[in-house]
Image (cartoon, rainbow, N blue to C red; front, top):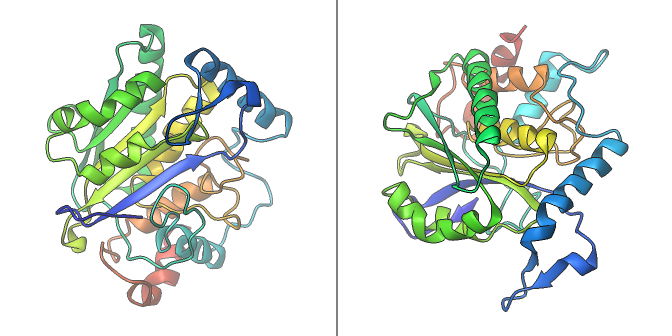
Length: 299
């Protein structure tokens, strides 16, 4: 979570981060000392990274794993890990925080808009729109919450951009999304090459109203499976399952990159998050009395 002095005091910050770095010859240092990758090598870096993941048996597309635990008790445990704890503290480097946080979700309809940087190929745009449209329907079914692909007054912005276009967002985002928090813009501007993708969700000042806006960044340089994986994880996390935890399995809410797509377990966790017995702003001790019934309702 990132703190801000703006009217949106706390941001829900999630970044799908891979700590593997490109070869030393491809890494440059900016004047601030931040690792960067040249434009010509970025797509190759992500292609190599995806190939490494696949060779290690990661980025699986199976949505159901036979004999994997699937019961109310384990779902309760996982829900506490990923819905009621922070992944990020005071910046992108503060991963793995165990600090408890209130439950946050959308209490109003989610209207998703997809926008592309001018240098994203048209063939990729059509493919990504189909992917996101289908996935939005999956999320709506899992949550039983109104989530649609809708350009009319959107509140969940999905930006597919090249690295150069991402850097320019620091100047263009306030015009593109009026009222966007400065902390959101700064978080996006600080993305490094080893942050594969990101979603920043802004809650209302009154936490019981849930989220008011979210912005997801998907890198156009990603190869197909990595790009789809980023879309699925960041949109799901932008709905409120904001943490990653090593014990949540089989799941995309786990930094080990084993699964590329939303699993059946993940769908049940989303269903729990949007159970009508819960609401935004509830703390762990307020959620606890409902957890068993909420988890059991998924079976």
